[in-house]
Amino acid sequence: MADIGFFVGALIPTFLIGRLLLWVLARFISSNVGRVLVANTASLIICGLVYGALEQSAFLVRGLLAYAVAQSIWLVADLVRFHRGNKKNSN
Image (cartoon, rainbow, N blue to C red; front, top):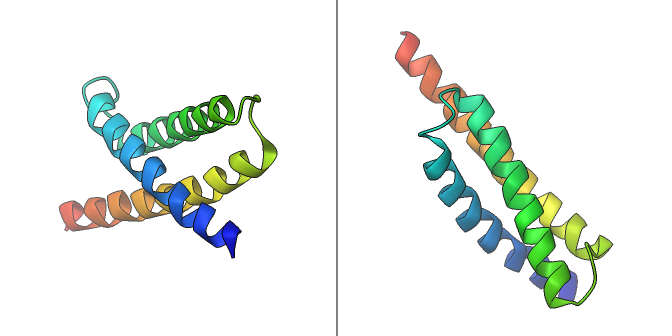
């Protein structure tokens, strides 16, 4: 049960950091897919490093895996959102 709570808790920082990075990277990366991939990868790394620092170890496997699953959910959601947006613009 604690793992479910940890996973739900991992959704929040990955979402917030990912949105911030998408907004910041919009100025530097014009490709939506490229920006999504870079922002989500950077968000995973940042969350993993912060978790590792708080637990006083580098990249704990449990934390990295939980953040990777949470970040993967946001990555898929972003890719679907941009894909649907491109379909609407092409019609």
